[in-house]
Image 1 (spheres, one colour):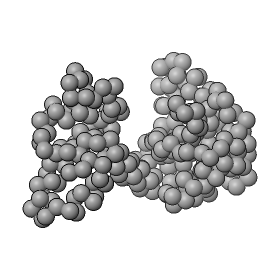
Image 2 (image 1 turned 90 degrees about the vertical axis):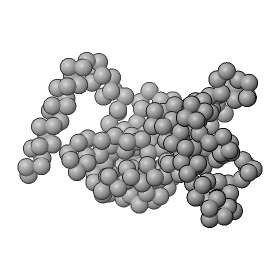
Image 3 (image 1 turned 90 degrees about the horizontal axis):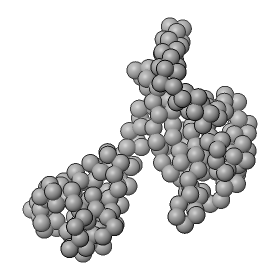
Length: 233
C-alpha cells in the first residue's frame, strides 16, 4: 500500500474480506493515536529512521503493542487524517454537552515557528450537573491580527458549531498578550452585538486565585453556593 494515499481510498479498494482484516489491524493504529491524544504527547520523533534508538512516541508505542507488522499506515499524513477526525468528534461532543447553555469564550493568541498568528479558543459553561466546565475548542488561523479579522474568525467558529452570540455571557482575553489593543477592540465589537457578554481580564483572575490554594478552595465553595442559590430560583 502506498502510505501517501488517503486512508479512506485505500480502505475501499480492498475486497470485503480484506476490509474486515484491514479494519481489525487499523484499530491498533487508532488505539495508539487515541492514547497519545489523551495524554497530550507528541507523535513525531527527532529521528524516525529504522536504526534510531528512539523513533518517537507513536512508532515506539506501535512497536511496544506488537501491532501487525504488515500494517503500513504509519505515515504522518494518515496520522493527521485520524487526529483531525478525532478532533471533530471531540468538539462535537463538547457542543452537545453544552446543550445550548449560556457560555463564556476565552481567547489567547499563539504564534508558530513561522511567526504566523493563531487564535486559541476555549469555552466555559455549566453542564447539566451544575459543574463549571472549561473545554479547549481549537486553534483558529487568522488572516491578520486586526480587530475585524479576529471578530470574523469568531463568527466563523460560531457558525461552524451552530452557536448563537446571544448565548454568550462572558469573554476573556490574556492581558499580557502583545495583541492587547486588538483584544480590547474585539471586546467592544462583541459587546455591541451582545451587551451581556461581559469582559473579564482572565490573566489577572488566574494570578490572584492561583497564588494560594486556600483562595482557590474558598472561591470554589462560594461558587458552588452561588450556583445552588441560583438553581433554587
